[in-house]
Every structure is written in structure tokens, then in C-alpha cells.
Image 1 (spheres, helix red, strand yellow):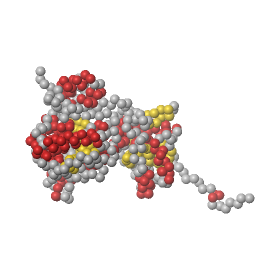
Image 2 (image 1 turned 30 degrees about the horizontal axis):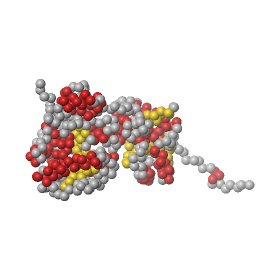
Image 3 (image 1 turned 60 degrees about the vertical axis):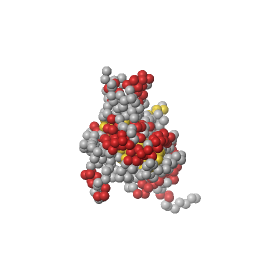
Image 4 (image 1 turned 180 degrees about the horizontal axis):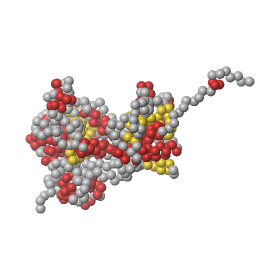
Length: 505
């Protein structure tokens, strides 16, 4: 009986723009480095990944991007800013990451490499392994400089660069500029704080890119879901020519039964090697629930959590990437904050030229202290903002901001009682009937995907504790549409007695 062998080529991937050769991809050099310098060759799927993920821009594209900088026209610049790798567990993601980091530090001589994981301890484990392996390799050791093991200042240095680590928080990577950022287990990113802070570190260098690895996620994996959806859409629509996001996904065809070994081979490219056998996967199949097996061993998304309150596909049907407000249309502002006060979101609702409502996330940042100043600045400088803000008045964390907003001279429209139910139902109905438009912003999309409702008697509102992730962006959007449908507040009429002399007898 023939041995079942894993698939070298992923089931879904971003295609190359041209033939990949040592002149058009750095991946060939990574393969050589692993074989000749590290003496730890990559497996066939890892070689495929290195070659396709590290494709280089053509010179024509470089000139197009930097027309006024001829000094960089002959530079080798990666085609992709982000390389996303999805593959089942125990297939060698860590070996690939170690090889890539060593190559970047000692062969490509990149100046700054940053490794991140769910916790800094997790990032340290990989850093520690790489440091030991470099120290044990004579050819690398003689090119190493002093290593720092001090807690919080860990640094593995070559003659040309440094490899440091970070955990996931909104301050991670702030102020740093990295040439390579490696992030493991992207499925564990339950909000955007870590990704937003870290991925920006590679924006400014000419050679700067992110590599993220993971197996499949679930409804809470907001960052991974967004990146995967973005890449998959571009692949399916055959518009990857200008893509800066590369994705390679080794996953089982969703139409196959979980017991089908063809699917096992699709999701486990290392299958058939001494590291991973059919017996190993059979043991996983025999001892895990179907949902766990699909996620961990077939790299399939399983949304075991309750589906969004919105009808399936309704939020996506409201997507219009070109949606804009009608000229001169008023912007009605809604505000809400995360239940733990870790983030605040400001959403605007405005009419489009066709009469439909357009909702847009105007600002979304960590913490809440920035909100009042942001709104004050818009009141002073933006003609679209009149200082009126809709806020859930009672029983919501955003209530802590109401006194600050009023002290700053902003007009707080309290959204409470029957208005809360009416506003939520009206917003739900607009989405369900596709009478609203949005531009597909990640935080807003994630909130809509995880939104759940809460009922108390006749009251109907969004449930902050039961919703998956941070539902506050959808609460703010709902508040903004509610405000847009309210009558204007008329200034109080001045009494004639206020200006005329009044004699009291």
C-alpha cells in the first residue's frame, strides 16, 4: 500500500506574477542557507513557501513606486508586505520560522528582526531556541556579537543586526522600525491592538515585511479572519497583481468528510515524513471532537459559537467599497467604548446620493482618554461636525465619558429607554434589508460578525457580554443612525421679558 504523502502545494495561495528563479525570489537563497549553512534542509512544502512568499518586485514596479529615487531602482524589494501561512499543527511552522529568522539575521543581514507571540514568554521560547542553535553552529557563532539575556531587553545580535521579542499589547513595537516581523499563532489575536501596533513597525524600511503563521481560527480570531478573507477574495476575483498580502493555506477541502485521508494530506504537508505519519493523525481523529479536529488538524474554520444576530450574508451584502456621503450631507456621530474600556469607537452615519445610509468608523483607538480631544478638534476644524454626539446614557461603560464631553462643550444626545430598543431594531432592519452601506472596515466588520442581542421584557439591545469580541463599533453605528433619525434640537426661544424692563410691584 502506497504511503500517504502530504501536499507540497497549498490548496489556496496567491499566485506569482512571473517565473520564480533565484533572480526573482529570495526563497532559493533561504533553501540554500538551510541546506548548506544550517545543515537542516527545509521540507518540500517549506521550500515552496519560501520561494513563493519571498517573491521579489520586478524592476518596472520598483521604478513605478519610486519614480524620483533612482538610487533604489536596482534594489531587491519583496513583492509582499505580509506573508500569511495557514497550516495544520505539527507540520513544521516553527522550523520554517527559525530558518527564516536565522537567514534574515546572518545571511540577508537585516538590521532589525522582531518576534512576537501571544505572550512575551511564548516569544522568548522561540528566541531562546534560536539563540542556542546559533551558538552551536560554528559558522554562525563566529558572526555573533554579545547576546543580552536581561529580562525585557533580550537581544540576539549578529555582526549586522539584532533579533528582539515582544508580546501582544497596544504598546508592543511602538517607536521601533523592523525589517522582519514574525508573529506566531495569529488565531489568538482577539482584537486589533497587538497587530496594529506591531505590523506598523515594518512600514518605513525599504525592505520591511511581516510573516504570520497559524492554524485555522474561530469567530473570535478577528485579525486572522480579516486577513484571510482579504487574501481569499483577491485570489477568487483574480486581482492579485497589486496585492501586498500573500497567503498560502494548506487546508482540507470543506466538501470532504473529516475522515477522508485526502483531506488529511491537503492540510498536513509534512505527512509521510518521519515527523508526521498517518497513525499520528489517526490518533488525533480518534481522540478529539470533530470541531477540534477540523481546526487543529484539517486547518478548517469552525464557528462553533452562535452566529451573528444579523441574517447570514446581510452585512456582507451592505458592503460598498466606494460608498460616500452625499455632498453637504450632515454627519451624525455615535460613540461607544469596549466593555473593559480598552478601546473607544466613533462612527458617523450620513446620507448617500442615492438616499441610503452610509455608516463609517471615523476613529477607533485603544483607551478612552483620546475621545474628548478628538471630538473637540473636529468641532473646531471640521464643517461636518456640529458637536452633537449620541451616547447610550445608562448601564453602559461609555457613560463614564458623558461628563467629560459636556465639560468640553459638546452636546450629548442621551440614547436610552424605548429609544434604545427602537434604534437597535431600526439598525437591524436596515442591515437585514440591505438598506445601509459600509466600506468594509475591519473593526466594524468584526463587531457585526460577532454581534448578539439581549432582551429584557420588551427591550432589545446589543449584548456586550454575549457578543463575540468587541461589539462597541456596532453599538456606535446604531447610535449614529438613531441620532440621524431624530428631530433637530431647536434653540430655546427667547422670552420678551429677558430683554424688556420688568417692574415688580
